Length: 178
Ligand SMILES: CC(C)(COP(=O)(O)OP(=O)(O)OC[C@H]1O[C@@H](n2cnc3c(N)ncnc32)[C@H](O)[C@@H]1OP(=O)(O)O)[C@@H](O)C(=O)NCCC(=O)NCCS
Image (cartoon, rainbow, N blue to C red; front, side):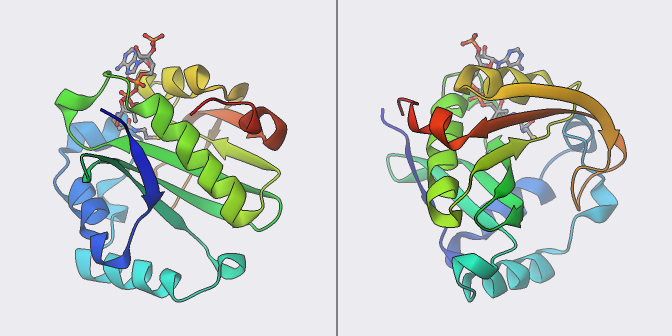
């Protein structure tokens, strides 16, 4: 089955909000997410809708869906955007039973290609929790380069934690086979 990756529609925002709101505290902890920082579904959907009203140059976030047979199996988001320069991506397979079956690697590559194109990026970063094996292995397999491990609050939903910083630049990304 082929993985398709495309920008999420505003009407599909529930895929993202339900994923976080239905996650257990243990799962969120593993991803470095502080449950108290997750917005309510209504506020979050409003924020996503506001982003879609903006041109790419002004966007604070972009979300892409990963689909098989036209059904969402995962998603990636991108934030900390400096248009024309760099941004930071995130990666998620929705169902636990679908993880480690080869979705994440093409999902990351195809999502990165969309972000580079839409946001005219020179480089793309990802900063997963250092103890969260799955994204760290997947980013390495996809072709990201390891830069460093450091302590930070990596995003709006996160607590202070050790993260690994990965990066890919445009020439490397353009050489990927998706
Ligand atoms: C991170 C995630 C998107 C990766 O997607 P995936 O479909 O599981 O990844 P793949 O199947 O393409 O695996 C890529 C590589 O990582 C390895 N890997 C993935 N999960 C792993 C795990 N839990 N433990 C060890 N290795 C793992 C795979 O074995 C594969 O390497 P290999 O081919 O050399 O064996 C997915 O596991 C996920 O959604 N995890 C929960 C959410 C999460 O932690 N997101 C990160 C937030 S920053």
